[in-house]
Length: 413
View 1 (cartoon, rainbow, N blue to C red):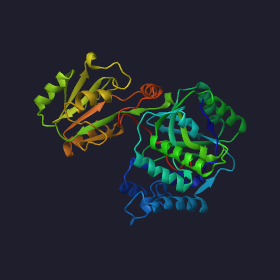
View 2 (view 1 turned 90 degrees about the vertical axis):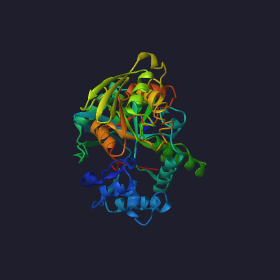
View 3 (view 1 turned 180 degrees about the vertical axis):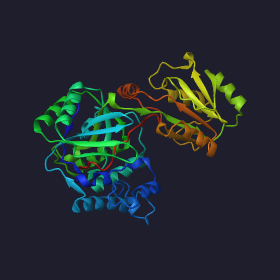
View 4 (view 1 turned 135 degrees about the vertical axis):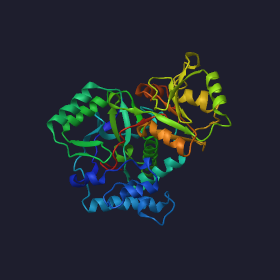
């Protein structure tokens, strides 16, 4: 059963929130982060990507980068850009995008429940990326960005959130330049907090939607603090890490598409013949972009034309992972025909989030790539099933939008 605790968030003073908020640390490179924060001393990128304030430090993982982030947090607090909640609270965070709304609870969840798999995963993590956030959280003495969790929708939690929203004003309510609305309510009534924590206590599992490296790193910092404090009681803040918990029914997963540098020695005729032989029906759709309208349909762009590839029933495995479209594409076409054995490391493949649209696939093929594939998005039910079976999704399977805003809440350890 899931533990969700209130905490004393460090968050922007109301007048600064719109200037502070940034995209998550891992959706941009250093140059992009510097450009985004240019002329804005309040941007949270000065904390989550603090290397932008150290132009002479070329190593983004140097200790001085993490020290700079820590100093910037203290600077934001001392200048009143940030303030800390007087008493522990939960928070309701609502995002709107293209007419869609997702409403979740911000709180802290238990390191022990990450360890015992109450908080379920669906991705492998990379050691170097974990180490970066371990150092960042540990030196900053804070979880600076939340983990994005989901749970199977519970009408009682939804009703309670809606009631609070209808009776109380948000502390923040604004729309960012990317047309995403962000609103935050402080839930500081003890009875309401108690009811919410009790209701989450009846939820059997939480699921990581996005933030596998953040959660793994936060957990390891918590375990490190336990070693450093052998008399810990389990109630200390380092035993918990910050998360936003959205009901699964609110979430929207975009397609996560593939572009490949070459045809692996094939010409168009031999490539088409091999794809047919692999068990796909091919329909030429012409020059207008074709979006795969159903599971087991794929879109392919090659030499100015779009094609529909339909996997025949006999090649679709009866297996939780292998029946996912990203797995069918990898196992039946990308690896055996185009020679992409490990999509995590192969330099001939790149990935394009569906938020960028099919035109971006065409643009990449006209610029630096040869062929593109678009897949039907993974469904949230698939993600939960994979996680429930303690399995791992293929790389680059899910692209969630909207991204969580960073800088609206921090959790002091």
